[in-house]
Every structure is written in structure tokens, then in C-alpha cells.
Image 1 (cartoon, rainbow, N blue to C red):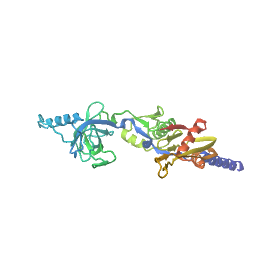
Image 2: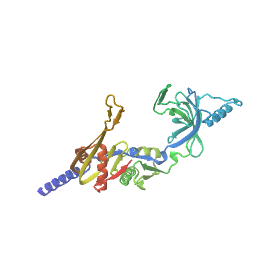
Image 3: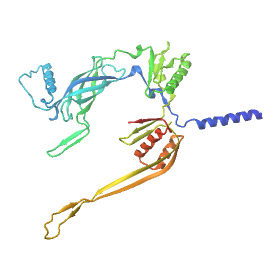
Length: 373
């Protein structure tokens, strides 16, 4: 009995030790949040159209002759003769119309479109997009767009000043395109499901395959998933399974995600993003900045009374140098919290932290990938 009690106690202590060692930042996510279906991707559409009804902010026909040609062709298709006439009104603008065709979209549904000026139009505010066909990469027409353009930016101009906020030469037409053609491939015709990880990782791909196989073994009596590489997981369709219901069950399975250790630095904005798995070996860091201030205080020298001298300017320059910092700190980052606390203890600004992280990486003490943007 005593031996059994000691064994149970040892197992309990070992379990507590393993719980302490397990990373506290391990996160779980649904498969639908970390992977997308290969057959369910978006398709890009593009078209060329005209926006009318602008208040003198459209294209100039001299600098944008294609706008006049397009307007004449449109009017001729409507049965209006334009021969012998020339218009100088700047109430029309040529635009490129783009949209994303969502997966499994059916004819009759609506999607948003984006309009962008091609010519020298100054604003698309208040304009209306005339019926424009949107084609895919195969040249087939999949949607037709038309409607009022919404522009978030604005422009105010006077004789001596101009104020512009945002972009006035691009806008959106919410729900402006109606889908006219269905995509050639259908979801029900697929023989398997291919999941693509949004953040490719071998560990996460293997875990997805294991979770799906565990579900399939209990439901269909055998494994159906295989991790092809760090990004793709292929799931074979069981004979007795409905593909739509199978995908609905799989995308809600919970998986523990894993990502490589990275430090992302944007030197333009001073942004630093440190991943949870970043580690730093013990290293001593000293950071100091040298500030040089140059001040120009020119002096005006006046000539003496009744003299023939002239007023002169005598330059005077004061240069002051100041050095701050210089403290030596030991940084040891076994976890993210300790690493951030060590960097903050040095008391430097984000640009200094960027230089320190680059130096730590050069010294080989940063156990992560350093990404510079």
C-alpha cells in the first residue's frame, strides 16, 4: 500500500512539473480560422467603364482622349449620333472597375466593386457608374456593375488655397455588381478537400491532419487526411459522407497552432512586433546616444556715429554635444515577458530598441528570425 501511494504521489508531482513546463501561450483555434479551402478561393474581376454626373471634376478630353472615344461609343450604342459635335464638359471620367468574385457565388447575388480613375479627373464624388461588364482571367463576363460611387475623400479649392483629405479619385459602389455567370467548377464535384494554411507551418499541418483523422476514425472508421507539406492538408472524401456536411464538421475542429519565432521591425514607423516564442540568450547590452545641437545667433554690428561704416552681420555659432545612456544591462529572455521587461529596463526609445535587436541578432543571441520592413 505504501509503495502504491508513493507511485501515485510521484505521478502527480510529474504531472504538475509538466504543466509548469508547458508553454502558457499555447493557443487553440478552429480549422476555419487558420486554413482556407482551396476550392473556395476568390476570383478577381476587372472592367473598364465610365462615371457620369460629375460636377466639372471629370477628365479633360484633350489630355484623356480615350474618355471622349468611350463616351461617343456608348452614345452610338444607345442610338445617339455624335458626329460633328465636340463637348468640353468635364462631367465624365474613365475608370477601371475591379471586384472580387466570392467562392460559390450564384447568379443574381450582388458584390461590391471598386472604381479608380484612369485620366486626369480630380474627384469622382457624386458620380454614377454606367453599366460595365466585369470579366475574369478567362475573358468570360461574370458580373455587370452599375450604381452611384461613394468617395470618402473630399477636396475644397479657392483662388489661393486648396484643401484635400483622403483620396478623391477612387471609390466604391456597394452592392453595385450583379453576378451573371456561375463559376465552372462546383463544390459537390470535388473528390477531396484541400486545406491551405494561411501561415504555413509543418507542425500545424501535422496537427490538423491528426485531429481530422481522429474525427474520421470515430465517424467513418478510418483516417482520411494527409499533410502534403507545410501549407496543404488533403482530405479524401469518404464514400458515405456528404461533402458539405463533412466540411462543416471539419472546419469547427479545434487545433493547437504553432508559429516560428519572428521579430518584425518597421524602421519607418518605429513599430516592433515580437512573437511569443522569441528567445534571447544571456547578453550584455550598452546603449548610448550622442546629441549635437547647433545654434546660430548672428549679431548685427552697427557703425559708430558720424562714421562712414556700414551695418554688418557677424555670424556666431554655438555647438553643444550631449551624450546620454551608456548603462550596461544584461538581457536574458527565456520568455516574452522577461525579454520585454529587459528591453524596457534599458530606458531607450523604439528606435533604440530596433538597433539593440539588430545588434543582438548579429551577436547570435537572438533565437528568432529578424524581419525588416
